[in-house]
Image (cartoon, rainbow, N blue to C red):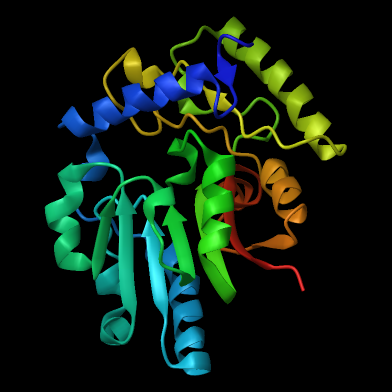
Length: 264
């Protein structure tokens, strides 16, 4: 599977990042850029953490990375004026919109940011990052003592559940990927190093854009837990209200929604 998957820092991943950036800068069909997003079910525990921070220390600085056309500032409501809300994104297409929503806008890679934060979060961005290991390390370093990172994304570590970015592959090819992926996940579960697998050949480049055709980081909770443990942090799963068996299954096995904090 070496021609289909890579690890950050390898030439294939670097070239993939360039191709993705060029796509995001020029596209007019990417739906995330069309209108403000609203994810109140995921923002609710983040807002609660912001309120806790304000009570505890009277101030709170927040960073949303991969903000896109976020609606989080409006969601904060009457506490918006009490916080500093910064946003980061990789495409200048969202700059004008974000400048009206946030106190500071960073159109750059995360490593350029030098502020420290009490709350850092992203909603459905983690699966689009080509350097998840480096990004997570940088975000942990930006976190103030007692701060938290919130990440929501799909996860692709349930046996034979593959990212939509592989949809252009034949059924037999997807089956082979599923077998290989199960082997990789088992190695991590049994104590191996985290993979943070990057899909080098996404459907995005083969057909019209559809949801998660660019989900190139095949997120695994086991990668995340193994990585955080080595840095004395821990990921705490955050529950959502599940109505019905299908919603419960999605939340339990196909969704990553965690609060990351120092493991005391």
